[in-house]
Each structure stands twice: as C-alpha cells, then as structure tokens.
Length: 344
Image (cartoon, rainbow, N blue to C red):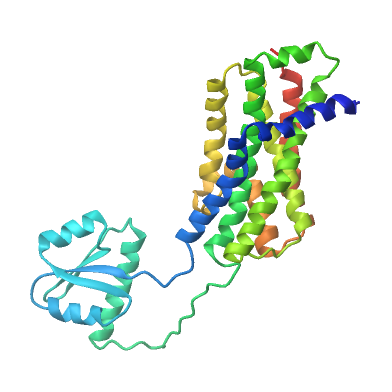
C-alpha cells in the first residue's frame, strides 16, 4: 500500500530539479524540436534532384550529351576517361556513359542512385534512338501530408525522445543520488522502496505530457503533420512508453555506483534500439531473421503504435497487442528493480 505523503514529496522534488538546472530543459524539450526542424528541412518537399552523368570523350559523346542535356532530369558533361572514373569513384557522377559502336554503362550496383541512373539514362538514350513504347505511361508525384518523410519522422522522434528522456532522466538521477550519498539519507526515513521508485517513475509522466505536446504542435505548425488519430490515443501511448522506458532506466541503474558505469550501460541498451527500431527509417529494411528480435524491442513497439495512430488514424484498441507488450516490459523491469534495488 503506497503512502501518498512520501510519494508526493519525492515527486515534487523531481519536478523541481529542472528549475535548478536549465540545461535539462533544453535537452528535454529544446533539442527534440531542433532535431525535428533540421531533419524536416533536410527532407522537405522539393523538386527531384538531377542525375549527374559523366560522358567519356570519344566518338558519339556530343550526341549523347545533346540528348541528355535536353532532358531536365539529367546534368551531363563530357570528360576524359580518367576524370569520368574519378567522378564515379568520388560519387559526383552516378554513372559513366562510354559511347562507341554500342553504349557502355559503368556504375556501382551497390549504390541505389547508380542503379536508378542506369535505368533512366538507358531509357532516355533508347527513346532518342527511336524506340517506341507499347504503352505510354503517366506520372504523378505524391507530396500530400501523411505520405512524406517528415510524417514518418515525427512519431519516431517522439518515441526516441521518450526513450532517451525516460532512461537518462531516471537512471542517471538514481546513480547521481547514490554517488552523492543522498540515497543513504533516505534509508533513515520511513519511506519504502516502492514509494521512492514509484515517485521517480511517475515524474516522467509530467515531462512526457509536455514533450509530446511540443513535438506534435511543432510538427503541425511548421511542417503540416496531421494527427489522423485521436490525441487521447497518442497520449495514452506516450504514457505507457514513458513509464516503460523509465522502468527500464531504473533497472539499469539499480546497482550502478558511478556515472561512468550507468552511462556505458545506458548506451549499450539504447544503441540497438536507435539502429533497429525504425526511428529514421523503416525497421522492415533489416533481414527477416532479425525481425522477431526487432519487433520485440520496446522502442519498435512504441514507434509502430505511434505511427499507426498519428499517420493512419488507428484506434487505441487496435494497438492492444503492442500496448500489452509495452506493459509487460514495464511490469517486469519495475518488479526486478524493486527486488534488486539497493540504497547504497
């Protein structure tokens, strides 16, 4: 049975800490907004980039240059064999065209831009040579809200921020209090471990509400990111995500004695989720045999649920499986922390 007086006092103390350390406010609230702005500008809607083509000097080079220069999709120039090889090696040119009796394309098949350039260049040159298509295609570019990279990115940044703030905000604070011998002083009070740890985790709920509101409002006002689901569903996911990662941070910090130790453990746990959990690109790009591991990660569960609600308008009921998995992560981490936590 939790006694509310010690719980309330620890919670209020945790909420006052940012007022004494203004840099905490920046990293918790300002940095995610700056990151969203930078990535949103980098991947904003803009005209398609030109394909840079290096044409090797020789018979037929000027004809190839004239054909490609007349197409707005290409930026082409004629250069020596050595210069063409250098441009391809350094990535300045996506493909080298060597005219002659036939056409020779030199490109790197491991580079997606080179593979695309080979298809586009060959299509343009074959058409110029008189090829006729059996069916005339039409093109339509898609840049509407909900289908852009920034729409994919904002939910991922929310999930990443909830993870980072939850784990660092709880784990780092616990170890700092232990290293400064503050936890030993609490041993002399009638406060239980459950009350102390519960108050520390509950403080994340307050900060989560502000972080989520800021990122959603910023995405909407600056980039037009639409909330297709309900704000209640998004907040419920935020609450469960924040409490899950706070519990995970607590688990990591339950025995650590030094800041350096908990920093290394935090990075060890968070790095796989930064890479695999689909914050900046889809987690489905990884091989099939890794998918069971990836889909079980708490950040993957949270990111996918947030995108389903924000981008697709999914109901909270449809995310019951993911919510249950996050709740299991939270319950197990908190239970183990409560069992193994020590004041000193």
